[in-house]
Amino acid sequence: MNKATIVGSINLDTNLRVHRMVKPGETIHGKEHYTAAGGKGANQAVATARAGTNTSFIGAVGNDGPGEQMLDLLKEEKIDVSGIEIIQNEPTGQAFIPIDDNGENSIMFYAGANYALGTEEVAKNSSLIETNDFVIAQLETPIEATIKAFEIARSKNVKTILNPAPGESDLPEKLLKLTDMIIPNETEAETITGIEVNDETSAKKAAAKLHELGVEAVIITFGAKGAFYDFNGYSELVPAFKVKAVDTTAAGDTFIGYMIATLEKDFSNLREAILHGNKASSATVQRFGAQPSIPYKNEII
Image (spheres, rainbow, N blue to C red):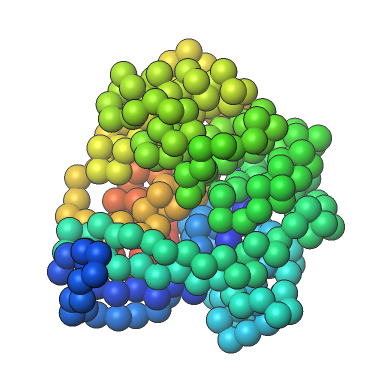
């Protein structure tokens, strides 16, 4: 069984189903409104845990009702939450997500307590990183905290995996040099490299740029098309499973969590791990919500 630590965000998601996305200045009716546990970090932690990975979490919530609710939900997934700080005078992070009839979404994110996660909080939970196989981070918490987590991981030969979402064009070179594997989508890959990514050829160019910046393995996700990888001199677009999507929220997070569950530490079975991630995310997009849509291991088997 793999062991992973997620350093990342925890949010309460407010979802609104609509026939189509609203235009600027327009008011439209919603079809359904509901809340669900979310945050890219928490989603990835739930996915890794449901996939059968021994999972720990380093993050922060507010001292409020949503924070208590999110902690309880993570505990129910058997995730080690000892590294989650409860921050006074900051609300738990929240995201607001409209979802249209095609299953596409837009996400507006208020960081709240997530941005109170600093290097000190990461350092005092270093044992959660040092004893695991992988540490996974995103960009919904301060970059300085991620750099600290990756420095700790590198010192103990723990593999570092960065999901650079939401995309940022000025990622510190120091962070990329500490990253063993990077997993952007095509838009995020373009934001980081400046190369428009829309097919295998352009994905390979973007991957080459990311290799130059110090990243060993590159995976670029293409949604319904699948996931492209470039590692150790070999590259391929691994097709997605064809399904009818109703909500793409947490599809990428599910992909990462399930891929990590089967990934060898030397990345030698990368294609197999990507297929596992593709299969799991194909189940996620057929359901509504973030964490409620993430499948359990027995469903994927």
